Image (cartoon, rainbow, N blue to C red; front, side):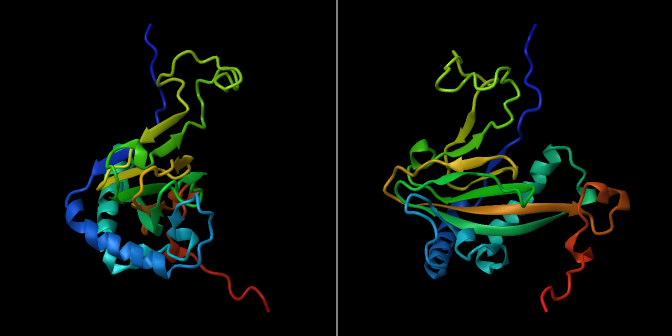
Length: 237
């Protein structure tokens, strides 16, 4: 009998039209933001990420309006492929920031638990399309088929052959002009940039709420939109 791979993780990717024409202006804007950002707060082996350095709201910067529009369009396409009824939800770019990775710099494994959907757009990539410039890595934390805990650990080494049922990571070589979209809760990271040039990308965190005029029953699982929230008054004094 065949074995079927149930419950696959859905990762969306697409090559964005007009990427080459937009590259120069995006690179210029990103490097200017990096220069104006806060003093470096991470070690030299970690890529410069705008969200750690006061540059986390590029969705409001007109220099990034083109890519913001692209992210919105591709996120809608992703959600439609997941079968979500777009008439019942609203989407918000919660935060968005540049990432600049120089030689031997990486982004350690992490997840974005503050959001629902995350996106990465590759603005400029040295040795385009190869793992040498730093692969985007997705980790298989669910381990649905790990019938014995730790069976693939280096000490046990009981996995004879890697296949879609037992792999531990998935990799995407960075490709200039490409967007990746995935669930924010999925742990991910970026391998070290082994070239002597910069890899520049943009990251987006997207939040889903119920539609502004949505059915009240939706609020059992979907947060109402921010327009319906009330901020506390002064908390101290």
